[in-house]
Image 1: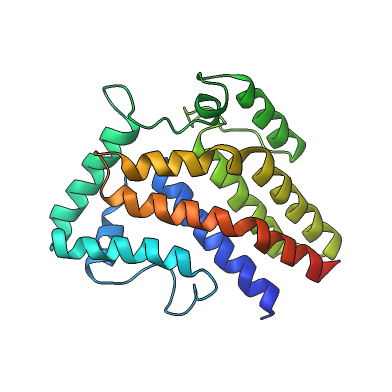
Image 2 (image 1 turned 90 degrees about the vertical axis):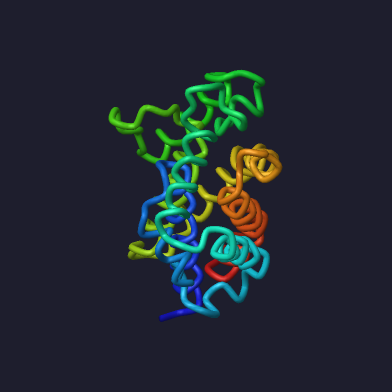
Length: 218
């Protein structure tokens, strides 16, 4: 396996982990992994991503506070509901247009839809959230990582990486760091403090990572 492929696999795993954390309540299996000190990546896999390791370490520290699977899982589900479902107003809005335009369904939503369409992506009708939700934006990057790993030519791989580079600058990096800071500071977050730290740290490294991949392939 090449060094480039190793990086693509780690990136795909991290995007996959992150979009699922915002998509729905954390599964019981995740609580089991935290309690048993197992995780989505093997030891040393994240060595190039030291800041991200700190976020996972924060999650592992929850074992000291919630020392059994059921208690931890109940806390994770309750926290997800309070932060991202309601019934009250969401304390931290997970939508790009809320941060960029100051309102839901603003211009940013139209712009992100255009970017998805240019890549041949259309949101499923089964998914109720708008396309500028953090879940969908992270899932789009995960999709492109999968496309990169299955690419049968450098041209196709470069196309996906350039799409990711543009999307990162035009969307994710413009609002997600501030969203993560607010999520981390929210008095309603505990488990999601770790998720916020991982999200922000990972995206902060993505620009340099993508540029290094492009330089290696061009």
